[in-house]
Structure formats: structure tokens, C-alpha cells
Length: 498
Ligand code: NAD
Image 1 (cartoon, rainbow, N blue to C red):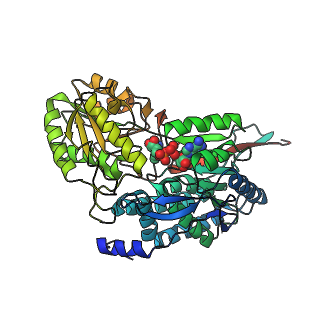
Image 2: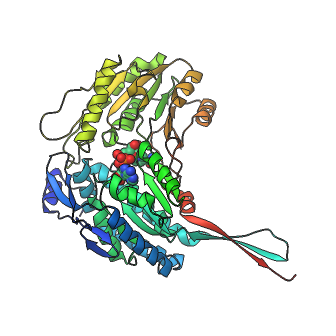
Image 3: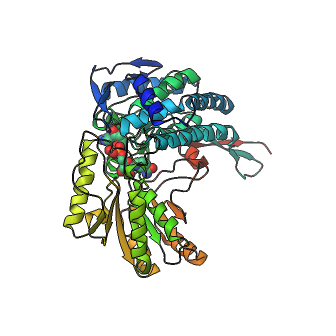
């Protein structure tokens, strides 16, 4: 299949799709122990796509036991890194072969445009390849001891890793977690979001085909408060690798404390500031990028540039250009390759975003484009929304909305811009638009943020770490730094006769 498929092609492919709906436990696709299922719904049409196994604590217990056994047997954990690499590269090749189908599953399940899902697949496959290729190039250390000893510093896998992921980039977030964890030799249990379980189950089929040993990779679809919580409280899970909201991240840390002090890596929410200085190069380009930064993926992006801070001398000009850019990004059928935005993931999220838009109006911000009234029809679409004259006291200026709603603030000095930017409980991403290298470096260093994008938004690749500071989390996905998170250092000290 070529990526240059038309809207009609994607509609036809969607009609032909079949779904794996069972959990993947110890190399077999099985119903939940309870026999319960939950519906997964296409938010663009309101149609139920499938009934999926609803796992709970009983399934978690079984899967953890298999994962632990697989780890202890060593068929993966003690296998030569070069051999693990070969299996993971096979999985990446299978994902490449099936990327249109995988992209379609995410689009149908959570409403994102197909063009965007295809971009996610490239990211997911690249991530898997990167970690597979890295793992046989990581060396241990020999400590600088005297000649009466040999101090070895070895890297070992942790054991059982539970990866709990969100719905906004279902397969890409999954890859960011499972690729380094598997490459490092761990047994991995994946819990996809209850709002987007289908691509994870297809991935399980491909993992089986690629030859991952039984029990090394398992998938438990279900809800957070049932199977997610059981994994997080398990005495036999060694690490939680989580991407999701800050509120749930805080709960996971408590669960770790209540159980076995498992490692907890969190990638959480954000309210990211995008700073535009009057000395930036090209206002048209800045406005277009600022619009993409918030409207991409319907604003359901952890690093959405949701706070636009503009120097007051150019603010009106930037907002005018922003409105024109927003106009060209209206939501459309997610199966149309020309759609820039699709549907909100579900009715809860849709109502939540509309509620924030109403609050923005009530709190006195100026609604420059967008509307708080409901869309017609079953599809959960929200138009790009821009508020000007936002202040840090307003809910739309502080809280993560996770929708296509931009809050524009004005500032008069660099000092004020940095203060406004850092006035947040979050610290995930930030942008700086300027041509003054001294200012760029001064401001980049002072921004409390896991990543700073200079004259771009969301520029990154697999070689750089991704993660947040403050309440945006403590983990780092991607790059060799994430491999370090999924392995433990062991010291072996040998006494020698000099
Ligand atoms: P969420 O926190 O509601 O859910 C995330 C996952 O946690 C889901 O699989 C869910 O079932 C599970 N979960 C929920 N309650 C649980 C519990 N008590 N115990 C164990 N697991 C539980 O988040 P969401 O709505 O799926 O995703 C949106 C959030 O994710 C946003 O806040 C967004 O910023 C964040 N996010 C962050 C990043 C990042 O890299 N920092 C990336 C994507 C999304």
C-alpha cells in the first residue's frame, strides 16, 4: 500500500478492517478472566467499533506471574543484546509493512486525522529501530581502582515493567515506552488507554509474529482504576512507565509507596508557553507555527503550545495572522488525508473542552475565533479557538485543557515574558521566537521546561530525550537516556592478588 491513498481508499480500508479485541497474555489471545468487555467508539461517527476485553486485577495477577517467570527463565533477559536487537528489528519491519492498518486503527479509535496517524507510525517505528540498534552498543564500565581489585559496573534489566499509556498518540506513546524497556531485556506488560486499545492489540499480534518469547510482551486492555491500579500496586512489578495526566501520575507514586517502591517514571501534562519577541524573523511563519502548535491533533497533545506570549508591540499583528491560520485548520473527516484536525476523543473530553471555552468567556477573555456551542451531528468536532487578553488568574490561562484552545497573553519585557512563562505548575515544553542569539540563550536557560524549541515548535527526533520538569513528570523518553531508565547498575568487585 502506498501512503498516497485517497479519502475513498481510506474509507474502503476502514470498512474492511477486523479488530483483535482480546487481551494478549503469555503468547495467547484470551478473554478477560471476568468475561467483561467494554465498547470502543469512533468519535467521528459515534459508531461502536468493537467490544474489547475488560481486564482487571485478576488478569493483572496472571500476566505479572507470566512476566516474572519469563524474566527468570532468561530467554529474553539474559539473551545477547545483538539477538534481542534482531527480534525488535523484525517487529519494526512488520510494523512498517502494516503501518497503514496500524495508523487506521488509531484514527478510528480516537479521531485523529489519518495523515497525523501516519506520522505517528513513522515515529513509533523509528523509535523501535533506534533502541534495537543501540542495545548492542552500550558498554559497561571498569572502575579506576588500584591493581588489587577489579571494579565492574554492569547494566542489568530491571525485571517486570508495566507501561501505562494514554490515548492521544496511542501507538507512538506505546513505542516510546516499550522499545527501550524490551531492548534492555525486561518483561513488559502494556496497558493501553481504554479509549484507544485497538492498535496495541494489533501490535501484540505482530510481536508474536516477530518472535518475542512468551510472557515477555503482554497487553491488558481495560480501565485505569481496575487493571491499571492493580499493576501499579503489584508487589512483583519493578517499574511503572507512565504517560498520562498529572493527577494519575501522583496516584501512581502513591501506589508505588504503598507496595514495593517500584520505580515510577512519569510523563505528564503541560501548559506550554510559546514566547514571541518583536525581533522574530517572519510574523507569518511564526503565526502559522503557533497555530499548528496548539491545533495539531485537536490540541490533544501534551506539548501543545497552549499559552502564546506575544510582545505587545506586535501582538495585534500576530493575532490577526493567527486567526487566518486557524481558519485554514478547521476539523474534518479523520479519514480524509487533507484534514488537519479530526474529532475529540470522546464525549467527556468534548464537553470538558467546551466547558473551558465557556469559562474563558465568563472570566473576561476575548474570544477571537471559535465557539462554545455544540457541533451538529454525532461527530465530536471542535473548531480552532483563540482567546486574547488572557491573564494567569484565568482557568484557560493556567489549566491543561487538552483541546484546540489557545490562550494569548501580552508582555512588554523579556523579564515579564519569562515570569509569565514560568508561572505554571507544569514544565514540559516552551518556545522562543527571536533573532537575538543572546536573548535566545538567556531565555532558554531561564525557562523551567524539559525542552525549549527555538524558532520552531516540537522540533525533535529520536536522538534527543523528551520529558518534563515540575509537575510535568520526571522521566525521559527516547534517546539512550531512556535505556538507562530501564536498567539497573550492578557493581561487581573482584579482589586480586597484585
Ligand atoms: P489519564 O491519566 O487519564 O490516563 C492515562 C493512562 O492511565 C490510561 O491508560 C488510564 O487508563 C490509566 N489510568 C487512569 N487511572 C489510573 C489509575 N488509578 N491507576 C493506574 N492507571 C490509571 O490520561 P489520558 O487522558 O489518557 O491522557 C491525557 C494526559 O496525558 C494529558 O494530561 C497529557 O498531557 C498527558 N500526556 C503526556 C505526555 C508526555 O509525554 N508528557 C504525552 C501524552 C500525553
